[in-house]
Image 1: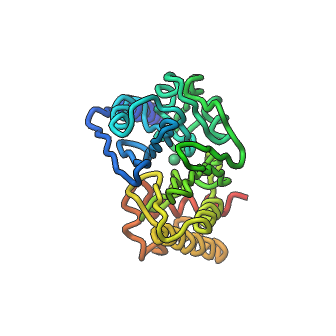
Image 2: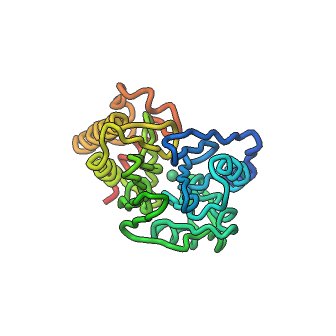
Image 3: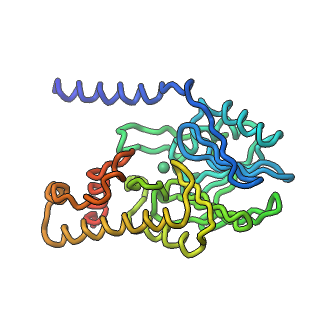
Length: 296
Ligand SMILES: [Zn+2]
């Protein structure tokens, strides 16, 4: 019983630290991709800004304490209000600034399941804490199930849903005229993926999403990953190959009767060592694939 209460206290303390995280040192780094598209890096998911005569279109909002800094960085690109904000998925490092931005009258757009998860709240099982329902201002005003086109600043932007990939509400946003694609967290360059099984993500759905993108892009396409630096088709092909290779090895190991711990000990990720140095270690990636493939 004592151990249990210590455990619970530790959990609460960790949750508290997370909520009180200090963002004062975070700087927003702006990277010009084309004359009208800019990638903003701070803390959390990569933001993409599309500027032009019809107004500012923004993809993802990082964390709430960063909103003022982000708005300052955007005003360096173009003055005036942010007209539209689209979320790639519901995770807090991509939607945390929604409320602040929504209060300014910005129209928020996202997949139906992002609306569901934000409006109802969720239990983030991996972190062991409850996420309360988001306030009205943080919620999408427009949500969609399959795809959506926006016609502004002289381009036809295509946002399309990929089912059960990183979560169950992922949207990938393509700017065909600029040949730029924002993949949200369906893509981490040179890193093992984070697949949020508790929020409807799946390994095979993620691979399907990557396959869909590869059908559309060419060697010149500039890809914005959810986190990390700009990427191209070759990087995405490498990512696809890595995930497929390890999925197939885990699958074969399961079929030959190995237990999870035996699979982890079998060194099946040996040639991808550098891929596990970030947020998702090799063991955690194997855990996810194992759990996903054995869930039925
Ligand atoms: Zn995410």
